[in-house]
Image (cartoon, rainbow, N blue to C red; front, side, top):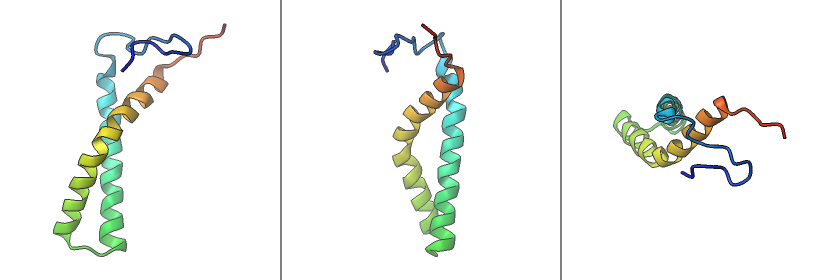
Length: 85
């Protein structure tokens, strides 16, 4: 990630270890995705439990790259304070 925003010069990493909290956001995103996959593929499509488990694992692994960035962005927006010029 960049250290500073190109438009507003906001420093992304406020302090060392700032993004450790993004792990909790990433965990909640992964849980939501797993539950959604479970409901869709078990109740609506009617796959067997083993196939549903495989689909949930594959979906979680594929979406982990997306979750990495999204969780950091969400964590940043929690602590971002707009600077008035």
